[in-house]
Length: 223
Image: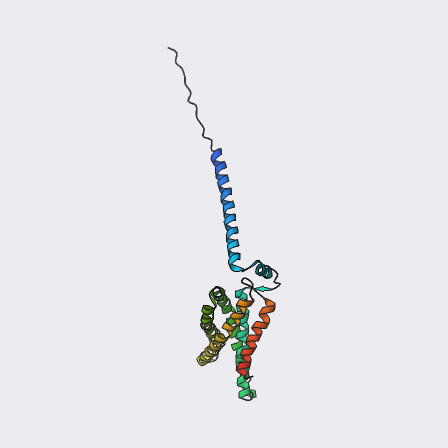
């Protein structure tokens, strides 16, 4: 009896079609992500800029300052000049220093440096708060700013005054709170009017920041 030998044909699956499909899906997802990112940027610009003119003016700024930069520099000024004006007022009232009291100038310099540094770095945090607050109605913003300014001033003034024992921190916090409570609302109102999108030009920032700072110093000195 003749026997037949049969061979089973092995059928090999072809995965090429699945590979092509995966690549096309990955490419489609990348295109979708790019489209969503472009749409999100468009929405952000519409919220940020009220018109194409404002967008163009922001793009043409030579030295734009973000809110974090703006309020950090403003905090540096407030931490430097008003404390110096207060010590100058003290010198005027006490009719100068004797030779034995020259060391007080060193303490004053340290206090000023600490207040300025704390004012600068805390100003970055204040800038983030103001960025969001400027999106709110004017009345809410103006009513909230004095409290934020007082907190900012207490932080910077108290940090500098702590060098003069504990009582120095107390008086430093009082002075700083008064300065911050007055300076921040005044500055932010003009900042909101002058900014384009979220940035303000340095040529507008400098006269505004120095002007408000020196007005406060003049008030401290009784000018």
